[in-house]
Image 1 (tube, rainbow, N blue to C red):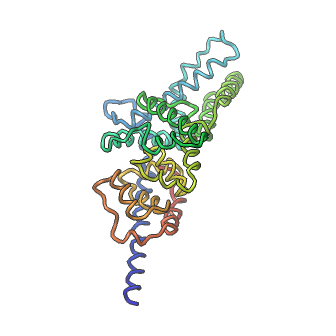
Image 2 (tube, helix red, strand yellow; image 1 turned 60 degrees about the vertical axis):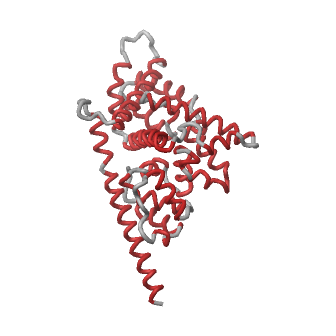
Image 3 (cartoon, helix red, strand yellow; image 1 turned 180 degrees about the vertical axis):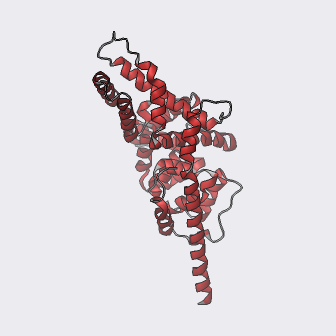
Length: 323
């Protein structure tokens, strides 16, 4: 009886420790967004030359340029002197002020950085990891087609990241809508501007298909695996992109939040997410070996079940709005 009581006490202490570590990591992450917004807006690039800042800044500028190009092509008066392109910088700053959009772009920059690290560390192909190769060879034509389309989308995304760009149509639907509304609000008192923006928005939405985006196709592939979806919870088999999508779906979290859990300051979230997704301790250790080879799981972590890990994650979900 005493041994059982001691075991329960130890398990409760470990859960408390993991919860506190998770809360500290989330509190630290919450301070990142205003700092990131400030650094991206800074004009002195000699001081802030960090790869992540440069990539996020590049994607913001690219999105602003695409929006302005769409607007310019939809001008009601093509001969008007007003040059919409001159407002690209103002639009870029307005996009930076959207915390959800900035969080997403930050997450994509981190994902690409980690993709390159995994390629260097484990020779993991950033476009065609082993699991995707198997899916491309599937006997199911629909799965094979989705896998081929994801491969193409992943290749395009990698090329865009190297150029620090992001197509508008690769944004999640709610963020694309927010970006279009930001464009409207840039000169929301001008009737001609509003009319042109509405035409531009209609044109952008006409060629938008969230299901055909890279992230949309990744989700479709994970769902197509059905009971075999746990195969995607191995980074070295599935590749980072599919792994992140699989972990988000299996643990009930936003994909961007899962990306941030791969950071050194979020290891409690990563461990709990993997457990909530149903992985055993040995499999979790393998994923930590791929991402954080010098980090060991806390003693007794195996006593935390999947349901309890999910409950700990949910207990802090409402305390932080951004990572």
